[in-house]
Image (cartoon, rainbow, N blue to C red; front, side, top):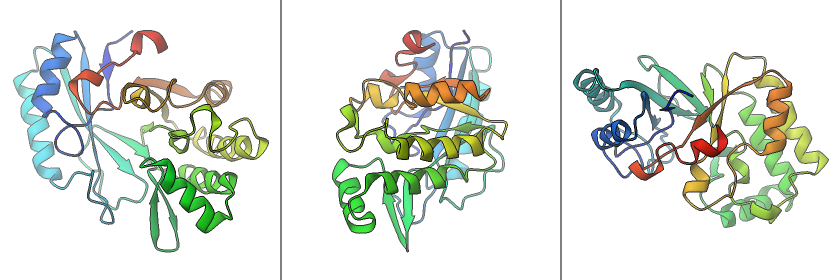
Length: 241
């Protein structure tokens, strides 16, 4: 297995460590390739995203040159579906959905369980399956990505199915429809351990059922940590490789 991690965040967005600190940690861990994937700019929510894309690109280019004899460094971006930022000049693109849009409201799906509960009650009559269907209909529209990020992010706060049953046929139809659309593209689906390292889930994205469906459809997968600190790099890769 190539020791690489392509879903990594730094102080250029909502990460804790600088890019150079991440590089040094990656070298210490014996990694062959480190890919940075700052959150693309979203005008409606600037609390977590990158606001200085040019500075980010220049810094990663500097690190590529400085450490070229020790590790391969890639400059990527995690492009939110609702981001209007161009993706030119990046080595790769992770396509992700962090929000559902209802009317003119952008509702984050990974901020808190209460936000999801309130959204389900306000817009879907308390029906989480309709909310999840809206999410997956958005995911199905991702284009021009190399990697699909945390495909079932909608389950972040659904440990032990506390919000909805992930085995329900309504939920299964929603995610399968999205997968059928994405599997027609030449993309990788990440096996993302980030929610485990941060204490939200006991297993990675996507769920086993979803992963089985991806594999049955000939889909490709790639391990990623969605790391926001040096401690998260390669998190539990040995378990899920």
